Image (cartoon, rainbow, N blue to C red; front, top):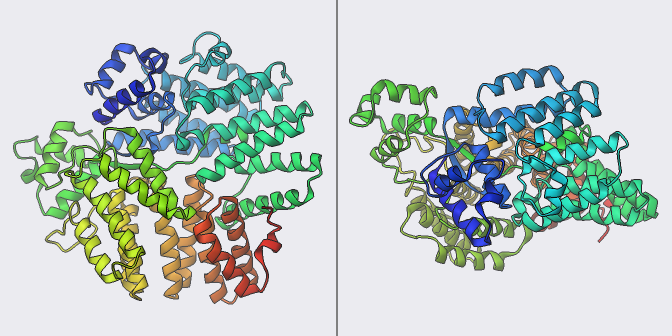
Length: 613
């Protein structure tokens, strides 16, 4: 992975005053961590991820370039999670065997993962909680030797993998009736997560799961009010971050609490939310089945991955260079050929030399902006989340702070900030659509200049580049040039589809791509295609465990069914879209969809859903 991330890790650790031992213990030697933090040593994706998680931070915010082989390593985990969720023992064991060939068996974090999977096979195959418990306890010792309960009590920093294994251990003990001290241990884990996981994007991956289990333990002790309070906290964490897992299980827990407390109005709303989540799976062609052990492993993903091997190949072909011309004086042609085929990972120094020869002045691949301070990436995330919540003034304040804190001589920083300023001027009426699109095009050309072949999207765009393309398409749609906008989305989707990287790992671009592509196809009356893209978008939401954006897609699909003369289906899609938008507090789009329901069906959607304020 990228050396500069180690330097960022060092700065973040120093900022919070944490010792190297508490971050490295059980994961990596202190001497190796020193080298990582000095930028002298690279470690694999999951070891790096665990180190950041021990600081309570998420590398999902960062746009990372990985080799083809490393991508295979990352992607296999998604397939493994899917097999566990589907109770598919045969597929799980097959995937474990293949995955085993990719891992660095020297790293404790990987040995622990494999041990946890072996334990999970007992759960998937026979629901053998005793065997699963023994296996999970062994797995935890790879990074947390000794009494892990005592370590939590004294504030041991944990990575997400360690937390879900602890949750699995606790769940198995609960199912076996070994309940002594469990609620106290979960309370300590709850406090640990709340204290150390200061990054909301990372906290949502573990806190709601812990809250669900703690709520179940409280219910068993007839502590219904406490169960409801912790359930509500977990549900709010999911809603604030748009996460879908474990929303279904949380709603089931909430339903039980509300029934016991005889809170009928809230119970009606809870069941409407359950109906909407179940409908989302149905509309995507999937099947919703509660599997909390799978949910412990599965969480929302908002990261971005680019394969360096593909980047080199796509750029070279777009520039019209032969392999011999590109690698001359850098490496052997045979080496370049193997790199482009994904059979060899590129040497970092030689990779940069080749990219520079092709006009790409981008030395660091860990973000759509380039900054040494992790806090800047946190601000970018808060900035992006302001718009769905109608916090426009806060967004502009954050943009000013970001601009002051990044090096504006770097192209990718200038591109990000200037593109946002153009959007701001468009919102304020300072620019017309055509003017804004021209200026956005100029910003795009800073990092993605036209090539002689005339091909516009000749490689997978980085996130800011995608955002600019998306805004240009929206501008064209607003100027009633729908065909031009559709052409952009078609080319973007073709480029993503041609990559080895699944759309799951282009999470954030995928959301707006599917929402807008579906909507614009409906406007253009290409209804069959709109329905197909919409369904693909819903699957993308499930893959990334995001429920908030699903409401937008359902709303756009309702228009398709309306035009096809299917009012009952249209109403069902629009009603459940409204419910999801309420659930995830999507203020910016909710008002539009609420008014659309009122106009179309002459009913107040708040009354239909029994919304509880």
